Length: 103
Image 1: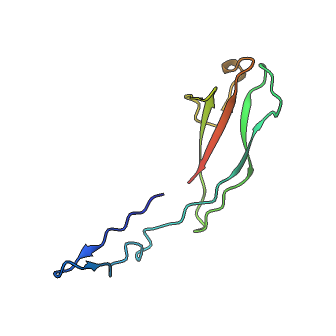
Image 2: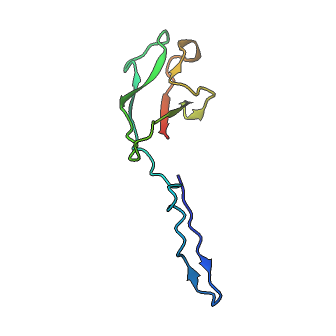
Image 3: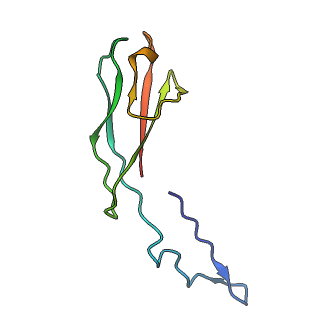
């Protein structure tokens, strides 16, 4: 999350940052990054690849955490957006990687 706080200028042109945009609770802190692993660790072409959450993300505000998955195959983005890539999409000697973003 990126928060940009623009200061308002007073009549004298000096910044007037007396208004806190987070005062009403509108700002939240980002959750920690989850620890993930791609399973199985030594897959064959008949194995589905699964991106598993090893350690859950923690939200400092106490709200529920959701996860967004993305996969690359041989360094190229793919359309896979959940935690599994089916074995039918893989081939020998490919390099697959999973990225998980917690929100």
